[in-house]
Structures are given as C-alpha cells and as structure tokens.
Length: 95
Image 1 (cartoon, rainbow, N blue to C red):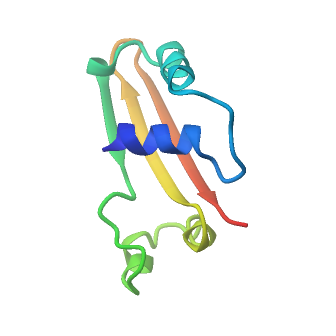
Image 2 (image 1 turned 180 degrees about the vertical axis):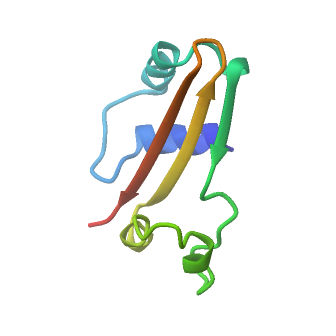
Image 3 (image 1 turned 60 degrees about the horizontal axis):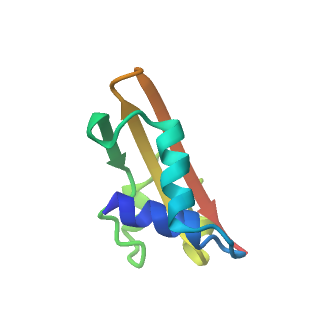
C-alpha cells in the first residue's frame, strides 16, 4: 500500500510532473539498498481524514491540517537495515 501511495505522490504531485515510473524506481534504488531490507511505517494510514476524529488521531502535530483541504498528506518513516539509515518523508500540500 505504501508503495502505491509513494508512486502516486512521486508521479502526480499537485502541479504535475513529467516523471515516469522508472524514474521512481531509479531514485529509490539510489536511496535504499534493497526493498527487502526496509522497515516502512505509514503514520497516517488508517486515519479517516473526513471525520472529526482525524484531528485527535494526529494531534501530535498540526503540520497535516492544511493538506487535508486538497492534495493530502503523507508521513512515512523508512529504516534501511543494510547501511543503517533512517529516513522520514513528510508532505502536506494545499493550494
């Protein structure tokens, strides 16, 4: 599921892109050693952003609030075990 969201965020950002799916995999291959070595967590997964409870489910930050208006939000942590690298990817986009 995260892979699908990541590809969508990469290929279809708010103002368009000319990138292709192979570009997504090229960037990931440069950043991460191998998909089987990764521990990936989607911290916004399972939150129903259309309910009043959404605020309480991510109350540790208001960073996401404006992104709920338009394009959406992502917050992932990725740990690559081979080189011992920890990456955080966060995005909240609005018009």
